[in-house]
Amino acid sequence: MPTADSGYAACEAAREGVPERGRVGAGTGTAAGKVLGRGAATPSGIGYAAVRGGFGFTVAALAVANPFGDVLAGDGSVLAGARGDGAPRTADFISALDRAPSPAELESRNTTLVCVMTSASLDKGGCARVARAASAGVARAVEPVFTEVDGDVVFCLASGSGDLAGRFELMQVETLAARVTSEAIRDAVTSAS
Image (cartoon, rainbow, N blue to C red; front, side, top):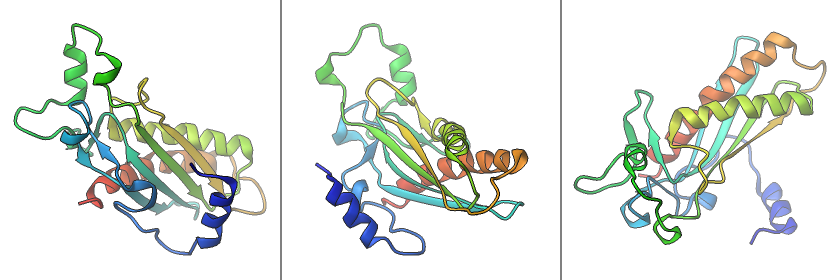
């Protein structure tokens, strides 16, 4: 169980540059597409994506992908889901249910955690708006998303100094946050293999 000392140690160990990706740290033991159980799921991990927008701000996302549902590619096909002959797409399986599964049938420890980071200068309200917009990126990459058996959440950190980002600068950061969030979740799967 993480403690305050764990958080302090993580900050002390932080380094510049692209973080390690794949089945490391919080990404160890993660998987996507658990509708047939963890044994039939696709391994996942930690993913990262970043972009610089026209206003000059960098927007990056670090994601730990451990969803109950499937991770989708940009074209909507399943990138990571249940494996095996005749394995269903999770959303299709759930849509066809004619009875509620028992708690024992559901994988209960699932979550997609995302930290969006930007060099824009944002206040607390701006960070909340960016995190909310980035949630759309989770929905673009995970299906089904935000279920009763998932603990999906997005946080936002802003390191900029000086004047707060203006209305359209904030809109750009929000737009890019959703994009890099979905890319980071997909990277968590592709980096795990």
